[in-house]
Image 1 (cartoon, rainbow, N blue to C red):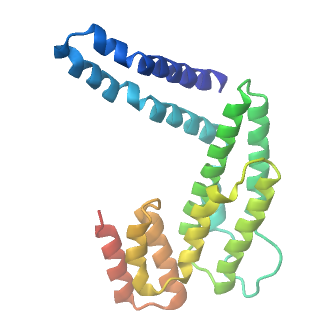
Image 2 (image 1 turned 180 degrees about the vertical axis):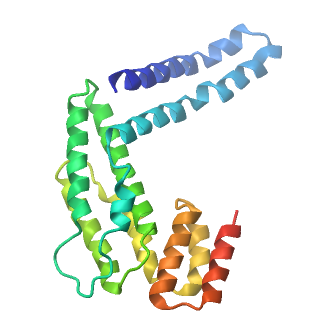
Image 3 (image 1 turned 90 degrees about the horizontal axis):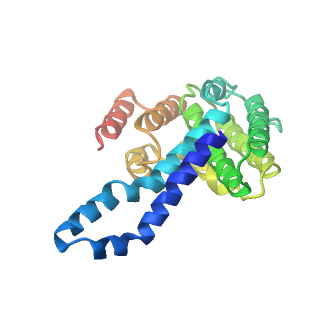
Length: 232
């Protein structure tokens, strides 16, 4: 991990040095070559921040062992008839995985600043896994929908005890997805267009679940899905 992070930081440092030298490069080259300089910066140097972010996010995904959790979430008990005070077991498992992840970062030989960044990326990875898992749920009651919100709140509280930064904004994508279960059936196509952060398969999974729960007509469900899938 430390080698991967060092590589990203080194590339970022080189890019910063080049950016500071941009005006100087223009001054020492003839006017005919200024377009070459701009092309070099546009196609290479200016892309370094995105590259560094990709490296760090990939590191977070590799160190946080939660790839199998979408199925765990999808297969949890969502057809409950009464909402109690107990959350689903996957929440505790996720919190345990995140604690192990933080320990790996603490002993990974990287700076505190980079640790905080990777912790944030780890929380975002958990959010992505939650949305994917919830989008795969096939059957659910109204109480089950409320249980999704309870699970999320317990998870937020647990993560907040592990990290110092505010975790709730990074899990907003999950809350928005859960709240979409309450939309009128005529709103889903517009909602999908307004929320490109969700994949089409995730939105279609949401629509299929809501259609099953609320007893939509088959024609309504198929037309809604067709419009969502046809959107660019």
